[in-house]
Image 1 (cartoon, rainbow, N blue to C red):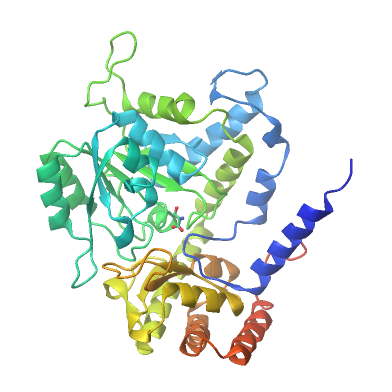
Image 2 (tube, rainbow, N blue to C red):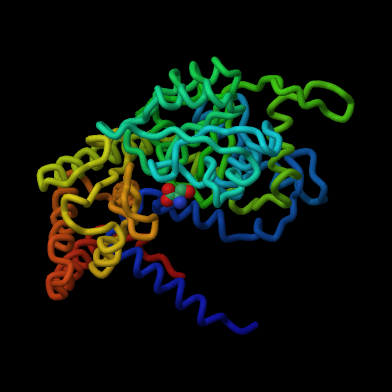
Length: 427
Ligand code: DSN
């Protein structure tokens, strides 16, 4: 068989890009080498539709054990009764929860995408906004914090079946007890999508959604630092309150409905190689040094908050409790798009992001989102955040100054040599 030079040289290029630059995309991270090894191996060859012990294919006795380990470890990390580790992504996890509890046309209530929410929380361009009737709450104009009064007002008016909390670009912790109290008034179920801060929740550094939210979904590749994928968790199983029955006319338990909604509802064969890698990531999260990592994320984000604030950057919601910052660039006279495009020339990777009450389109945006989980994995500490913000500021203040940008890029490439990624690793 001929070697695929083209693709492997692209993988090498991507490795070089990741090694040399400053990775500040809030939803990205660097997995450990053992997580990657678990993903690229013979388990990718196996079909295993179904669940451990109940598969539609023979030869699943080994992947059954690996999937069971992933389930047990996920349950242990979050101290929950139920875990489904098969969703291919966070979007798939959310789709499965919705399929399990909603009928097409049912009302859902989530955080507006333009205020920090996620596509799958009801955006009109996503299945969640097409199959269901979406309503939204936002953040307050004066302080950028989630407007729970608005959530309550819309919930009482529209009586959604599902209220979704969690966000993609929100730097503050959530009041899950308040969300549940609102949901209980209208007999709605609560889904928390904790994809972004999951690693911090795992170590008890942010409030836990599990006591208050019926379902908790997450991706596994953000602060959890695992492979690209999703999970669905429940603190405890319960009977489906919306009266869906199984073919024998019995009330269905939610665990049953969620499992059915993942497979065969929304997915076919699970990615057992990715599930093995999820199990490895969960193993790592259960170790004490993940606590050191999670605490360092928060310390780094706080240090970055201080450095941006001292340079008169406008941080949405006034600061951060987690791993990310959303920055409104309007007082700097530059759009998010321009900032993203210019920063990338200096090997600084961030993403443009809408800010609450943005007057620009999602393709332009007034803001940027920066996150520190990936650089914290590389070993960067508080003292480095000041330098990083200084580089960002230097580029943003003078976006037409190519020699300036090149000089920052050279400094960054030199600096990152001190924090090697996968030393000795061969493609
Ligand atoms: N696209 C992800 C993010 O960047 O936050 C969410 O799915």
